[in-house]
Amino acid sequence: MAYSFVEIQKRKTYFIVFLTILLIIIYFATIWILWLAAKIYFVSVFMDFQNFPKKFFFPSFKENVILFIIAIKIALIHFFISSKNMSKKIFYILKAEPMDLSYLKHQQLKNIIDEVLIATGSSQIEGRVINTAFCNAFSTADFDGKVYIGVTEGLLSKLNRSQLEAVVAHEVAHIISGDCFYTTVVCSMFGIYEGFLERISENLVPIETVSGFITKSILYCIISFISALNNLVVSLLSQQREFRADAIAVKLTRNPLALAESLYIISKTWRGKSTASEAFSPLFIVETKDASEFSTHPPIEERINILMNMAHADHSVLEKMMENMYFRTGNIRKDTTPKIGGKTKTQKGWFIFKDNKWQGPFSFSELTQLNWLTGDHLICREGALTVKKACEDFDLISLFKPLHKEVSYKYSCPHCYHGLEELKYEWASTYRCPICKGILVSRSELNKILIREERSFSEEIFQQAEMVKKEKQERFRKIQQIHTPFVLNCPKCGKKMRRRLFSYEAPVEIDVCIWCDIFWFDAEELDIMQVLYDQNLNKDILLE
Image (cartoon, rainbow, N blue to C red; front, side, top):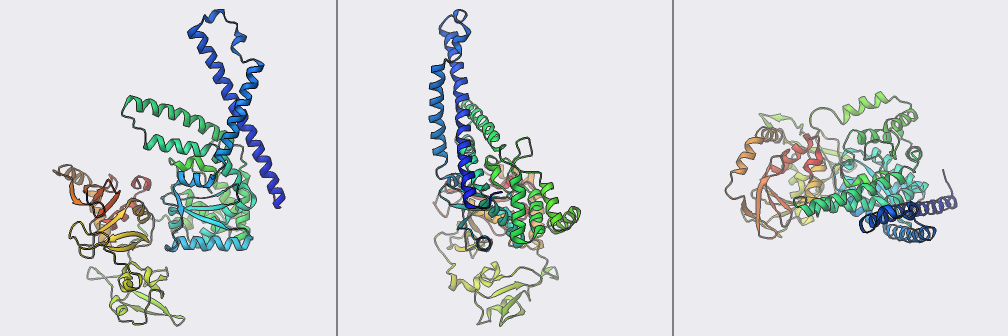
């Protein structure tokens, strides 16, 4: 492994030269075959095929030189276009966005990146987040020296701080070793175009018509060819780079168990298969595609075993511990607050950190009488383990509305026409009616709400979710019998919203504006949606 800057730069130069030569060879072979096929087709159609000697069909020396020059030009154009703004193009395909530092998990990610930078003495690294349920992390590097570390919302919701530190350290190891640059260049050569074509094929080309079917077929052939080239080039990357990054991450964090836990959690969840991320599988900490002869990562079990040996522990111990912690039966978001007479006990609920000690617990009515309480005070719910600021607790936001100016009458409720209050729900931007408790939310913000696991729900919400699942068929029958599905007016554009069930897996009745791509949930419907999402194993089905 290269440790000096000079040696890393030499490796980059050699790699770029090698990749350019490989592109020239690939294009020359492709053009040569196409030229041969064109000559055979032209002679067979317009001339007497039998009278032409076989050597006529093979390109002459002069033709080979011309074809080689054309291949060089195309390869250089391909390389220079692909190498410009590599990370931005990858972010576009993956839909990676800058961190929202108002959300604690994103702020935590930034803090961890900054801490690892101080430990390594590296330059500035920017963070990116993909708004998706699958669990994975990646890093990219550009020719101008800009480097990025990205994670998914699903990963942020599953890992604790020490586990996230280990994942970030792993990606930083790829950056300081130069491996990140190589994989970014390789993916930009072919993976970007594969991702672009897939998005065009899925979103822009209808298959109902004959022309659409032909176009889809052509795009499929092109995608298959580019994917084959991508697999060929990617297979040249050494799997040893993942072992090196794991070892460096352990040196940085001194916690091999945390990285082993992270890899185990990722391996047991959806990693991004059947998405655009497959084209960029080499960038991720765990391969998004199934293992094959073109695998860019070593078996994850082997990586975990090595890490467990570093921690002087056994793999079976890790499995048992993680099964009990993360994959046990039941829902971890169920509110376990004690009940009195069938109702949730809410008389005592919050501890407050003041004067270097915890005070309380206080009920909500008692909190309203505390003149010294501010939104910056640290609080902890009774029976919970998480600590947050008071203004970040969903049930206490109303106490700090003057401070945060949460109330906004930008939109009106489609039911009671009262102004909608701007509300951070699971730290996603939503608008709630204070009268009927309905919630207006966009598709991207809804995805964030479903993925994040900040809130817990009462037993009543879980019972309603079970009832919704039992009434699935009946709900679909009733929704089809509605004379006109357009009932409510969209609070944003004023056009009629379509009433339908959200999906077959989550048959919650909602109103959606097809023009603004926003959803209206009546009271408690969004809570029920979150419970159904948590209980569904194929979470990607719910995230459209």
